[in-house]
Image 1 (cartoon, rainbow, N blue to C red):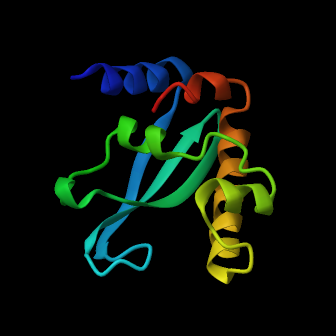
Image 2: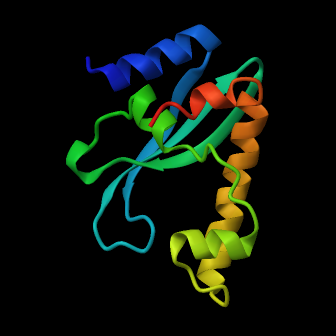
Length: 127
C-alpha cells in the first residue's frame, strides 16, 4: 500500500470511521456521456452517518472505492458564500447549475463537519 492509502486507513482506524457500500449501479454523472460505476455509500462515526453517491473513476471500473478514495474526495473546507464559490471554481453567478452545485457542496460540507467536527483539521490532511 502506498502512503496515501495507509494515511487514510490509519485515520479511519484511529477515529472509528466506517465505510459501507449500500448499492451500486452503472450510470453517468455530472452530465457526462461516459458510464461509470456509481456507489451509494455510508460513512459513519460515533453513531452519526452520512449517505451519498460516489462516482468511481472510469479507470477503476467496478472496484469498490477504498477509504482513501472516499476521504480524499470529501468536501473538507467551508465553501463560503455563493459569490466566492463561483469565483473560486469559475462558475457564472447567474447560472442555475452553479447554484445547484453550490447547494450540494454546502450540504456535503455540513454533513462532514457534523461527523468530523473535532478532527476536521486531521481529515483535511488526506488529499
